[in-house]
Length: 207
Image (cartoon, rainbow, N blue to C red):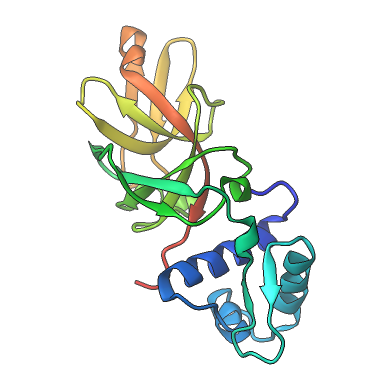
């Protein structure tokens, strides 16, 4: 999450970014309110004005779709790399599919990459099928953090899971009770390679 935004501000900003990316136009205040289940616009207007003051949004007076993402803060972009499974591991596509016109700084990163989520094993962490998981490249994560990982003996396969470990084992845990964790004990732990830490999501709109 961007360090100077609250979780609520970040979620509103991410919705506006995603809406612009998918619809090629800014959302109306009514559409923003509907997305967050709000009956009145007062709270959203406060957040929009704060995002404007912080430089993330620009407003065009007199327009119905007045609030849009400030492209001046778009950096080099975030590469979208294939698909990541949020159920059973699946083959990771290493080629860059596209570049998201969003600055990594919005997720508190100097660089990061996006992986498309497929499946429902992370739904209790609010990571849904079709979302874009944003990953900061790093080789280690803290106990209980969500990470993108590779399992060496499952050639070029990646998965998004909660990583838990102790002295004897490493567990890749889903955020859905319908799925079983993957447990690696002793030397098997070396099969798991952390690709990076999950730092945010770009939500799929609709569907």
